[in-house]
Amino acid sequence: MEFKSKCFQLLRMFIRRFCQLQLGLLLYGASLAMMVRADLGLNPWSVLHEGLSERTGISLGMTVNIVGALVLLVWIPLRQKPGIGTVCNVLVIGAAADAALSVLPPVTGLPLRIALLLSAILLNAAATGAYIGAGLGPGPRDGLTTGGVRLTGWDIRWMRGLIEGLVLLHGWMLGGTIGAGTLIYALANGPLLQFFIPLFEVRQTVRVRSGVVPAAAANDC
Image (tube, rainbow, N blue to C red):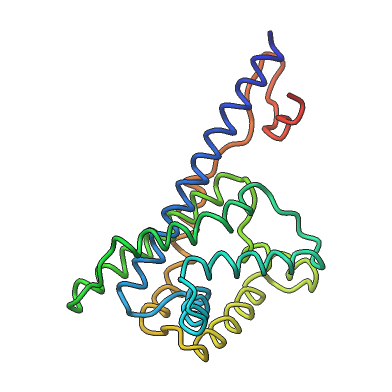
């Protein structure tokens, strides 16, 4: 009975984490669409995605998915291990972005665009906190940063700055949108993530009669 109870708790926890992951990814895609409609500048990776989308004629969401899949290939020499969340990240965010763009009309008027941008940046951070807090694997771009840190020994801030700087440059050269929103995102994202990630972090332990069991022990079931 104790073993069954442990397995049930672990399954329930996994379902909760998986639902939180999916909600976070869906909202992340929606936040990208909101930033596009605000038309005041995108975050570095979205600048690249938009530039590639305009050059190739592929939808923005599909471009997000394709770039995510290509970044995963770089994980191989970095010896990064994907999780369920990593795969879902590649599949869900782009589809959610395209779906949101199909129903969200262009916004006119600077005050409304500013409000939409600020809402998008806040939602983006909350969504990131939700999918990272689920603990089911990092996104492809996050893993690229952490893998680079492990390979080089650099501070994560320098590695992330280098990667996003190069991504931003290439995206701008391809025609992606850079503006005030790009700068606001860069300044606000870090502090917002420091708030949202702990808020949404799921404790990965369950209690049974014999004590506390790590959620990773779900494999025992």
